[in-house]
Figure 1 (cartoon, helix red, strand yellow):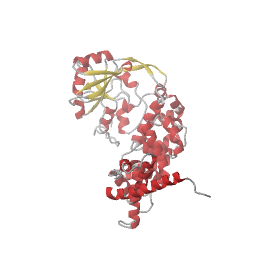
Figure 2: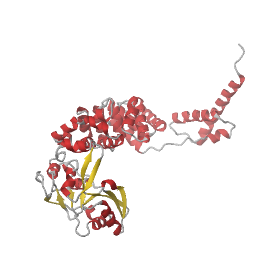
Figure 3: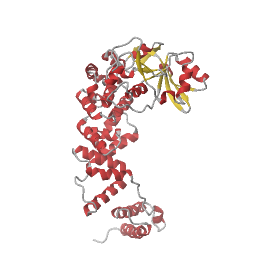
Figure 4: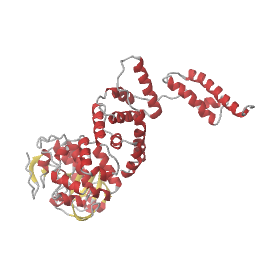
Length: 454
């Protein structure tokens, strides 16, 4: 197992080789920045995740496929831009004040950041100065497992015991936890996000205690940053235990002032796993919120997008009527057929996705231990295609019906069509339309005649 002691040089005997390190898009970027022997390295999550999958570490945590490749360079940003452009690559100044540019190569973007140190911080933003010292740059990162760096030749550098913490696993702030948190209060939420991936037991006690002590500082962060970090936490593999820890440590109360329900959240996560559904942040958030009356306040606190907020509210509003039948009727029975028809009608009225999610929430709310009644529903929702009513407003207009009466007639036919399980075709629907026209005309004639004689 790698040693955990801090190192001035960061040099280790760990070597890894991954295909992405010399990929056709990234190689030209590394070559341009490293020209003349400059010590350019991969940094951040790509290094951490590559090491998690390496036999050299032997971590019980499974590594994730490397998606975002970040690069550190001991050059000021203007020099990094000059080198990239000289090599025929595009350099986009995405965060130039903090030393970050995006190198575009073969259609892919790579975040390139100049090594830096913090000059001034207020818990929300930092004033930085550029440096050419790798250890100094590593010191300003949040956790030891994120302070590792990797040369293109596979050499791994570890200044603060990150390799040992990956192997343990252990989530530990670089240096003094209090100091790291005061630099950026978002690191409190990041601690629990990594706990949701590695397990809350992996949380270094001193680091967790510092997060608890400073929970109130979360309110100083922008709501957008809080919402983005929180939603990432909700979909991690061990989110259930992390969310319960957040509740116990006062973190959930600092995220939003509402009555969170961690136990139901854990049941929702278990249902998703049993039904082979991918973790969904809005569906899981609905389980954590639990009540439609709280949806708007939570949505504003987390700065949800309009689409996310509407979906959250829809799931919570539908859940009370979406309670699934606790028993599964025998295949081919009248009860089973009635259940299937009712399910398709709900899909049509509310959408297959919202009804599925509301049904999961209903099951999680009543602590249903068996996901069997939901299995058919989930499978049906996956293949659902909304049928199209065989008649249209133009059919009514062609028969002399206009104005609001058109909607009345269509609704009449649609209710009948749904009750028939969407089976009747256009010919049968047109026959039913004649009934609707007679009904509409009768209503109109009644209105024109006025009240009868007393």
